[in-house]
Image (cartoon, rainbow, N blue to C red; front, top):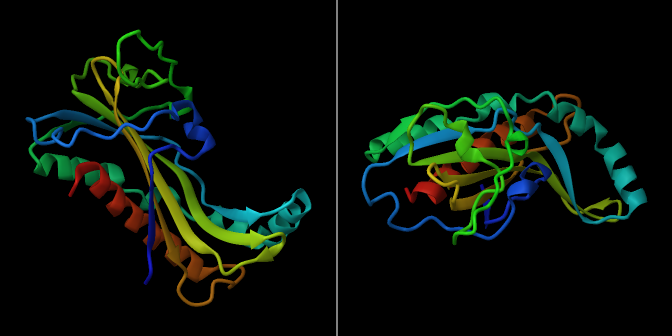
Length: 231
């Protein structure tokens, strides 16, 4: 199966607009420069699966394409995306194996609802949200806040003409900040796009679409962990 992987170092959804900014790559020596305590935080509201449309489309084209995809859109909303998201547990297990410690934080707020952070005059790139405020009495070196801004299918169009079948798509993004000063240590986004095996247009249950979306979710989480941890 062909898998297309694209790495972006910007956030690509409305939810992540607030933290979009300069690219920050994690120091290559970070994980090897002594044991760290990391709070791995998962956005409490992952994206609902949706049918994304790309390409040259006018307003009328968009209306037509949305109407034509309404059956698929309705089915995608029934897929339990959250059940398939295991990246938090995966990262915690990998970090422990690497000799680091993780602590548990269950946020009640999504990223965009966190308090704003007043950027200091010191050098560096700082999060626009006070991510470190998630720490109460806990002690940590850094917080890793993970988002799932995009899950579902993607299909290219020229006007109202589809240019091929839908494909499964998923994006995971993260902002890793210093717990001491809210400085961004790294920000990254990983997208995986996978063709749907067999016929996709199987209304009303779209079984092949459902299988592809779950498999692609598993694939992007593996890619994301590798990009972040280097293994």
